[in-house]
Image (cartoon, rainbow over all chains, first blue to last red; front, top):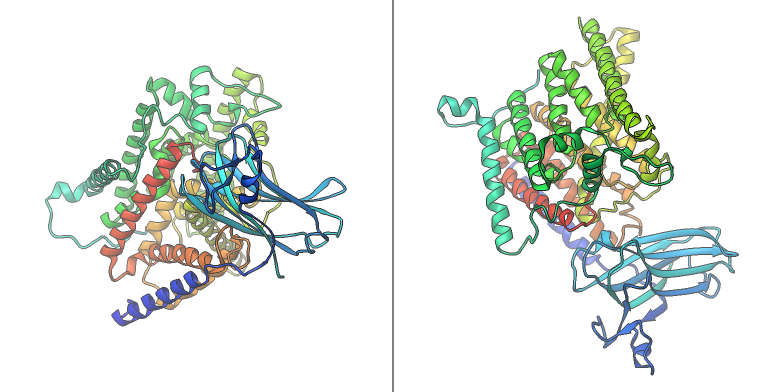
Length: 178
Length: 438
């Protein structure tokens, strides 16, 4: 059985509407900002920290440069209580990568008494497909249900294996309402 | 025997009609060369296979075996995890990287022309299948091409009832890749189903027993080779743990280290594996009914049952040993003649009502939740973007399922053909740059 021509129009219309709805829904659910760092304050410091660079920036004049010698980029940590007891944590960052060879990841880790209980990543090379330009990456991490007030949450950028120079800007961590 | 409905063609000279599947392969090579040269000249793709760009990923391990044979290590990754057919064919050929890649491509094209001829694939469908993006692995020194050749031999052995083709195919596959893991359950399942068909019991048992013998022989040959060279006969099994191939629990949502430009293929391979598992379960249920109540059993060609079993085997292997990470599933399923057999079978079926496709599409959209698309877990995509991405994947999948009854079949086939080739070249370019494309 074949579709009638007008049915194709209906189908196309539905696909188009779904697509438009999808595009309208591009923005993720808003969250409460826990940390927002555009590295401008660090860039204005004297002397300027070596990892802060004015070679490229997504906003302002400075960004965080992850050098070849370093496996780690910007990091943040706080106890779950101090972070406002989030159930979900969204990490956003603008990245400027030289290529897709490196295995770079944004890591969210939860530790209790020094022992890691939760370790999840956003693998940057899976989602960034354009290089030498600024690209937004983000992921919402659902934290473990039994997380306690004194548990430590760590968020950091990590280059596993082969390293390359890359830039990070507008590093944001948000608490997402359940 | 199933056979897809051929395209309506104007009268053509006899030799063109007789060898039209060969002409289609020639046309495909010409179109691929045109597209590749244009995209390369315009700078849209920047890398082509060459001796400088092909020494990537597993090629390094195959070359190690080619040059100095097997090495086994208890404590770290070693080349014992790989099977001997490709490295030894490579050594015997005396070719280097580009030469071996061209040999692989030629073997694949010859086997695919033969397969298309035997399955009587309509030229349009043959062209579409030749553009499958996962076929990028046919133009690099990987095992895909040899596996395709030997799998074609076993598939056509089953179809034409040529026992030696079947046995040689199984033996060759078993020496090329760890095929016996996937083939043994598929073979046993096929024998049970085949034996239930009227007058086929003895044939099925003979083919099943001799097939298992061929697989055992392949394992024995691999073990002997490795034992002779390393002192460890089971290196090809024991080395797997250093490659991360250990039994593990499923980790939701599923992900793909190759990223979003390969995920859509791997997702569809997973869909096909799950659909094949559903069909095999239904067949097993009908087998039980027939056995107990003598109810009619659906007649299905053995090669189709084997292809279904293979897809189930690959899916179970990936899910059990990669714990929700889906990389490789696309090339294991799509870069094989089993995919061609299943598409050809689907194309030979009577038209389905469009309601059925809508139901399949709706079910498929729900199924994509295994990637967390309706929750907040799909990396860097909002729910709306993820639904749009997987909606397009579903539309692509339904186009293949409904191909035989598409009103604008020619236009849609050309659209898919060009899109597939662009994706093939894009993924190949990534692989040549050492990007994660598996």
